[in-house]
Length: 285
Image 1: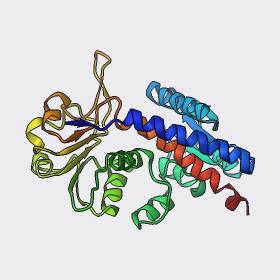
Image 2 (image 1 turned 180 degrees about the horizontal axis):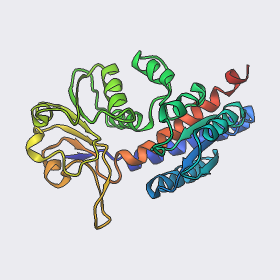
Image 3 (image 1 turned 180 degrees about the vertical axis):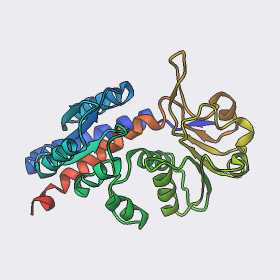
Image 4 (image 1 turned 90 degrees about the vertical axis):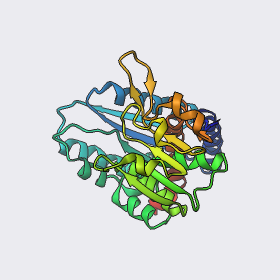
């Protein structure tokens, strides 16, 4: 059993981003800029935004967080987005999800300039990704693909089971694996017999937010298990969606939680921001 170490790889990527930032500043006088919209006071969202801001600072990326009250109107958010779309010093815009129930999330995401959509949630980027064209790819699935690549795991020809079908993780994860010529099965809350699908898979990618959803008898010997879930137990401990202790001995590779996919998400967001900064000249034409 080998560990897919996302923490180590994310550090490597962050160092690469830092060097690219310095190069952009030296050669083009461009400091990459990332703007984040944070609505409400959800502790998990606030903590995550704080981690993003610190990572930006460490990489030399200019970062600004627009904190807004839970009661803010949709029109007010759209006004700020419009302002950031027009700001030449802002290369990437992301809206921290979830948004309050009175806000139409789709309308907000669609209001972001696709060339600044570093989260990869705009329909323009989703469509291009699905077509196998160059696009901003959602950071978490992007991070999983980079992790597989780092450990020379080629999805081509593999049977892959993606557990979870969210727009943020499951759907783009399945799309990227399909683009890599894997045979992909997507399972979700309405799947009748989850074990029937996972037990045949060479690679399992799970991001359903259910503690111990994937158990030992659901995984075949030598499988590769990527745990994208993150759950906090009553005792404060962070765990994924996989019963790690019992599943790990059967695996050829497995991601830990924490230290697996989580750190990769922020690293790939930084990578997307650099990509957007490199596009700044084309945006300004």
